[in-house]
Each structure stands twice: as structure tokens, then as C-alpha cells.
Image (cartoon, rainbow, N blue to C red; front, side, top):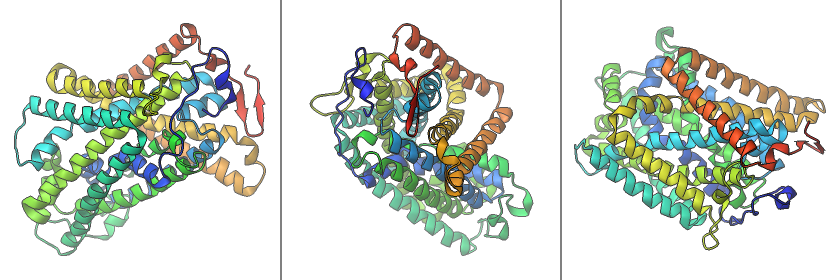
Length: 483
């Protein structure tokens, strides 16, 4: 940890994560894997095409702009305080420790729930690669548990092996996804029967004939990008820990913008709207598109890409979720045993096991107890909103910490003040629109996540008596007492 206060009486022991263990390039891959490109395209392809009337390309590119601005806010915060607690620390020390705790809780909830949502795709994808049409719940559970345990073991053994595994899977996943997306562009441009031909409407946020909804498209696009912030949660283990993780976040967003836009534009016109919607309803949108492009072999390759995407995000979900938990436990806002670091592997082994087992158990419960599926689906549906909330809070934390720069020059007014405020406002608008259009069960799910965070915060304050709630408010070149 960066803060000298870490050594004061009553604080958890200082962390001993392995410094300088991974490169900026490996960190970038971890952030991209957390977003799960292929799996995410599979989930959003039909919805985004329908919402925008095939104007999804411009929508994705425009959504990348506020995401890049938010990523730059993360970069600035990391220059100030390179701590794996990230937004928990930044919001807590710049604005309020109570708001910081809630930010940390939303981060944990988003990563665990989001990872479970991706794991649910793993069983069908693996079986498709093997040529099986089985829909056995026990097969899905077995595959999910096996992969979860393997990725948990990798997470515990060390960040170096985690990074190497992530890079290896990413190379195969992205090669397949991008290759087939380019094939899709060529296929649609060739005016094959049943395709939706390119037109000027594809270049408009309102789509073909102005029939699309830019608002609905932006709602989906914000969900698509979520997860790039994973580069910051391993910052204590990255070379040049104050500089590289923030740069990796910005690069990850830029690369994801290219991959998502190319994939959406390349795949959305391969099938007719009716066939694409039908395939999406069966959870086979990308595999069906790939089959139309290259038959059974292409379909199996796409299923492999989806499986690798889910396996990768399972691994990053455990690694990143564990480090957020570890960062919070190091401040005693969570039980201190969660801050223990393995002396052999230099990883937060206890928090890794807790997060990993939660993901495995929740995935199994979902498949085996149909009575909880509807309730859990509502929670999964609002995961993107949780990401939006802590993205907004992080942008505000960066503005608050660097507030003296806002009036120092026109450049800083734009970079530190106006742009982050605009990006936070855009995400806030998306958040409000999403909540207003969401069914009551999903609104209750959001309220439940926040309420559980408030209860845990009170426990941390009154039972664990964490000194974090008394930290001084910080700003650039100044530390002021908390009032």
C-alpha cells in the first residue's frame, strides 16, 4: 500500500503482493479479458442491431469517448495513489470514506455477479466445441465448476502465471473473433442472399430509415464496455505501478472500441433480422452467424472463442475481485483475514478462494435451483448499472482530488474539469434512463445491492471499527482534516 498510515496501530498488516511482476501489455490484456469481448458480443449482437436499426457502429464509437475520458480519470487517480483498492481508496480519500466503502462494495458485487453471468455461457460453449447438443444442467454445472477451480488455482499460484494464461487465451480468442468479423464484412458486401446490405443508415446513430433509438443503443453499449477498469486492480503488481496501469486502461478501452465496432458491424448483417433475433433467443447468435459464414468449422471456432472468452473472464473475475476485497480488508472495512497474502505465491490467497468459491457456488445454484433463476436474472441485468455508478464516482473523485488544477489553465479546465464532468453526466443520464425503463424487479435488485452495502458499511464502522472512516480528505498538494 502507498499510504504511510498503513503502518499505524490497529491497521491490517501491510500487503506483500509481488511488485513489478507483469508488464503494461499483460495488464492491458487483463483489462480486456475482464470485458470478455467474444462473450459480450454474443450477448449484445442482436439487441444492439435491433435497438439502433443497424446504426450500432456509430453508437459504439461514440460511447467509447466518455469511456476513454473515464479511463483517463482512473489514470490520474492512479498517479496519485497506486493501490489495488482503486476507486474504494480514491473516492474514500477524496470525497468521503463512507461513499468510498459503498463504491468498493459496488465494485465487488459487479465483478462477482458479472463473472457468474459469463460463466453461465461456458457449458453450452464447451459442449458446442465438442459437437454435443446436450442441455444437461449437470453437464453445465460440471464444466463450470471444473473451469472455476482451475482458474482459482491459477489465481492463487501467482499473478505471473495468470498474466501468461490470459495472454495465451486472448491471442486465440481475438484472432478468431476479428478474423470472422472481417469475413462477415466481406460476406455482407458480397450481397449474399439473406443478408442485410450495407447502407447509409449504418453510419447514423438512428439507423436505417431513422427507425433506431440512439438512447436504447447507448444503454446497451455502456454495458458492452464494462470491465476495462480491471487494469487498475492489479496495479501493485505492474511494472511502474503509478504510470502503466492507467495507460493500460486507456489502451484497453481504445482496443475494445475497435474490436466491438468491427465485430458488431461485421456480424449484424450476416443473417436476416428475424433469424438473428431467433438465434439470440436461443443463446446461439454468434455461433449461428459463424455457421452462415463458414459452415460447421467456423461455428466450432466461434464456440471455442466464446469458451475462451468466458474462461478468461472467469480468471480475471477471481483475480480482480480478490484484489478489491484484499484492498478493502487491508483497511479493516472487511474482516482482516481477507487481507492475508500467501508468503509462497505473493497473492491474496484467502480472498481469492472466497471470491472464486462464491462464483462457482452461485453458478451451480443458478443451474440447479430453477426457483432462483428469475431473481438472479434481475440482478445480472443490472450489473452494467453498477459499473456505471462506480465509473461516475471515480470521475468525480479525480475531479475533486485535482480540483485546484481546474482553474489553473484552459487545458486543465478541459481535461480535469469539463470532460470528466461531461462523461460522468452522460453515464448518469444512461443510468437514470435505464432505471426508468427497467421493470420493478430490476429496480428492487439495484436497491437490494445498495442496501446490503449500507448494512456492511455500518458493520465496518460500528463492529470492525475501521480507522478508514476517520481518514483525512486529500487533494493535490494538500491533506485536510476530516470534519
